[in-house]
Amino acid sequence: MIDLRPFNSLGGANHGWLDAKHHFSFANYHDPKRMNWGNLRVWNDDTIAPNSGFPPHPHRDMEIITYVREGAITHQDNLGNLGRTEAGDVQVMSAGTGITHAEYNKEDITTRIFQIWIQPTRSGEKPGWGARPFPKGERSGQFVVLASGFDGDGDALPIRTNARVVAATLKAGDTAEYPLGKDRRAYLVPATGAVEIEGTRVNARDGAAVSDLDVLRVTAIADSEIVLVDAA
Image (cartoon, rainbow, N blue to C red):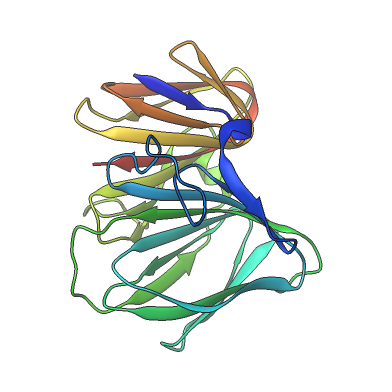
């Protein structure tokens, strides 16, 4: 029902300018038990040094969601998109038939992000990029949808897949519920704080792979900022 993946068990590599931790097999880290969780393929916990970043590189056929935890990330791509996404906000890149992009920390402080890759349901479509702010006050005590492949999810950024990315900020002692459904899978990571799910403690930057739950109930042990992917 809940597979806890402590932060110190994650794969990763420190490149100096980038300290990357991988919840799933990625780059030179390979664990056959951590290849994916449903259609969720990548969850990277990246710490990017000031005035550095990822130079231009290509992607295709992947939905890439970036959640900025601290600092800011500046995106630029070969479609002419240019944008800066700050802490608490989200950007989505639908790689589609192919896109080349760069992601830079142009700040004078460290930037920390979650980068999430979800396999698309639809392929053969044009690439695209979008970003928007999600004030933390609006998700105080409740889950808010940040990115969604479903109609009717309000101002959520669109993704081309059977999944949602949601987030909540909880005060210590507060509980939030998310209607998951037993046919779905969730992967939850507290960006800060610590939470409890079905008697299991999940600390900051730990991962919790959740299945076979109609309703996911999360109780904050400390003030917490939570990001969750609802995957097929």
